[in-house]
Structures are given as C-alpha cells and as structure tokens.
Image (tube, rainbow, N blue to C red; front, side):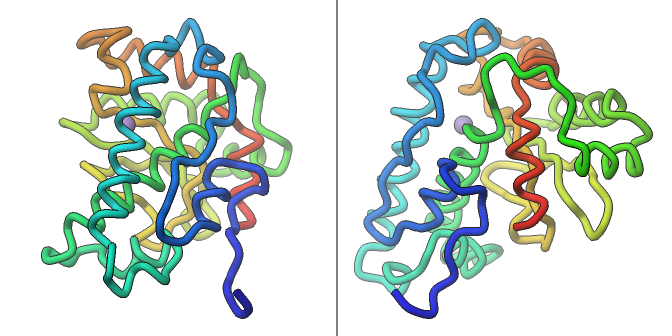
Length: 220
Ligand code: MN3
C-alpha cells in the first residue's frame, strides 16, 4: 500500500483502526469493556449502541460501496468524496456515522474527571477562559442540538471551539479538526435517561471525557 497516508488519529484507537481499513470495513474494537462507563452509560446501552447501531452503519456502508470506486478508498476519503452529494447520501451517512461512532468511543474513558494535558489546557484557556467554561459550552451545545446529531470539541484554525452537527454530519467536511465527540442521538442515552438528555450530557462531560485522546488529535 505504498503512497497511502496512514491514519492521523492517535495510534491504538478505534478511530485509527477504522481509518486504516479498506472495504470490507469491520467494526473496530471498543477501547474498553461495555460496562466500563457505568454508571454514566450502562453496559446495556453501550452494547446496543456498539453491536447494533455502529455495526449497522458498517454493514450498510459495505453494502452501499460494494462494486463501486469507493472500495479502494479509506473511510475519510469516502466521507470527503460524498459529502453534500444527494445521490451519494447513503454512502455518506453510513461512512460518516461509522467514523463518528469510532471517534465517540475514543472520546470517552472510564472515570476521567481530570484536566486536559498542558498544551491542550492552555489552548482551551486561551479560547474559553477556563476548562470549566469549555465543559459548559460543550454541555450547552449537546443539550441545545435540536433533534439527532452530535456535539463536538474542535480545533478551528488556532482556536478550540464547540459546535453541533445534525444527523450524520461531521466537522471533517468543514476543515475543522475534531478533538472530542458526544453522540446525542436518542439511542445513546434513552435506555438510561429516557428524555433527560441533559443528565446524560452532564455525566459524560463531567466524568468521561478522554482529554488525552483530544490532545492526541491536535497533531492530526
Ligand atoms: Mn449513535
């Protein structure tokens, strides 16, 4: 595979594993056991989310790109090539959701209430004032997202910022570097929190954010 760019995601992550695959794509390994994020996210939610929802996007992606030019392409290239093209919506939606979910698994870590590593922390402080204000902005974006979608911490130029995307959309297609993702589709929390999205988001933002992974994405 000479001349190909290897994944820029931190080594050993689900995101890197997926980015280094070609058709047929397979579900990358979860970075922890399904019960590792309790009590914020139950094992039941995580198992369904991973083995049913994430797997469904991987399977649908393989079906959609079978015998097409996308068979030869890495996942991020497929996402870029199909973004905004109505005729390729099935490929884009499943490719982007396959990537978004791997990135979401990597964005979470058991019981991590620690601060970001120093380089990221100083960038966050330059953009938000404090890490607490950054956490608050991420919470607000995740709670305010109308309908299904994602909340993201991103590197936008030299600034750290927070944004939302709808449905399968991803910051990858707008030239921003994703640092962390929070899934706010109902399947991410409904078994545990029913309609209380804010409680799910607060638990994730206060206890599960993988700041080391976020910092590792600064160089990607
Ligand atoms: Mn999901």
